[in-house]
Image (tube, rainbow, N blue to C red; front, side, top):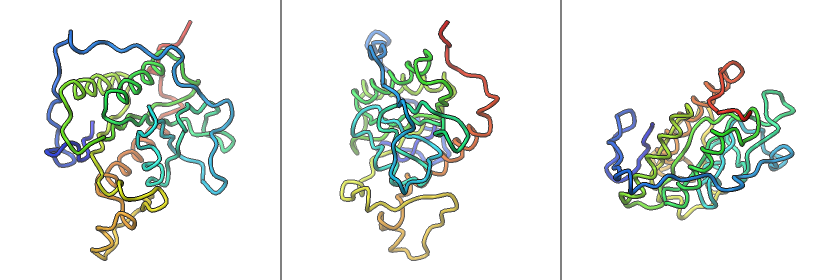
Length: 239
C-alpha cells in the first residue's frame, strides 16, 4: 500500500504507513454486494473524440469520488463513468482491460468500493477485466474517525486478497479552486518546470501527491499489461 499525503501526519513516500486503527470485529459489520452491483458498458466506453484511448480506466465507487479530477490530471487515464468496461483487450479495436477503483474516504464511498471488489471477486464483472488497484481519496483534511479508518482497512485488505494495489491520496487543497480544465496534466516523461513559481502553481504543475500517484499507478498498469495475458485470475469463476 502506498500512502500519498494522507492524514496530517502521513509518512514520506517509501516509508511504511502506520497501521490503520481497527475496531473490534463485532463493531465492523461485514458488507454484502449491492443486489445488482455496478453495471457495465455494452459498447466501448464513451470518450471525447479528441481523447486518446486510455491505458487505465478509473471507476468511481460513487459520484464525487475524485475520478474527474484524476482523469484530467493523468494523461493515460480515462473516466469509466461508473461502469465496468466490457469490450476489453489489447487490440486497438478494444478498450483497455485495466481498471482502478476510486473512492472517497467516507463510509458511503468505502461501502460502495467494497461492493465493487466483491463484485469482481465473484466473477460478476466482464470477462477480461484486470483490477489494478484501489485509490482512496481523502474527503477532508482532518484525520479519519475510527469507524471509517476501520472500514478503509477492510477495503484495502480485500483489494490485497485480489492482488490489487492500494494507494491513499490525501486532501488536495488546490483542487477546491480549480476546474478540470484548469488542472496541469502529468504524462510519462514528465519533468518539473525550472521556474519555482510554476512548480507551486497547480494549473502548471500537478501537486506532489498527484505526481507520485501518477508515476506509481503507471508502473503498476504497465506491469499488469505485461503479465495480463498469462496471469491467472484471482476471481472465483462461476460454475
